[in-house]
Length: 151
Image 1 (cartoon, rainbow, N blue to C red):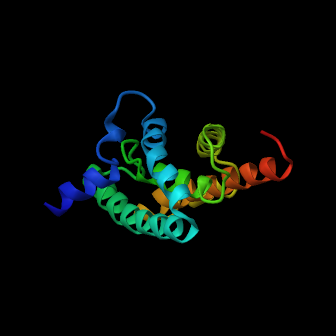
Image 2 (cartoon, rainbow, N blue to C red; image 1 turned 90 degrees about the horizontal axis):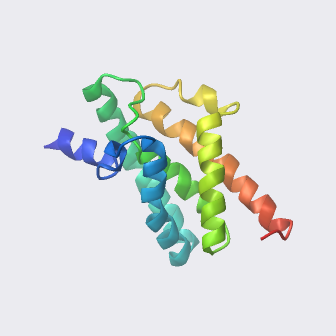
């Protein structure tokens, strides 16, 4: 039962099993959570992110062991956490959500330094850490765009 729950959470309620580009599907599935966290205020947003990080690290670790892969592509809870971090201080609006989505996917796929190094951490830590770092990069880009007065 615990293993099954971990796999359901790690795949973010099976979004990671959708065909082609599971990381993109995981990020799409995170959009309602990101909107909820933005509308609920900064304290609730940080608490939600912390809960997703703790649950994600545990469930990703279990999934890595069960599936016998260091970073199974069907595990997308890391994309959920990374996208939540991207959007945590972003302005409200669908344009910002779309921009955050594109920037997060760019940094998650590109994995610039040190994002690429973080995925070498063991188990669930490595699965989660690289996406959180990608979320930091994407979030900083969104803040820079907002401070420049662009859309």
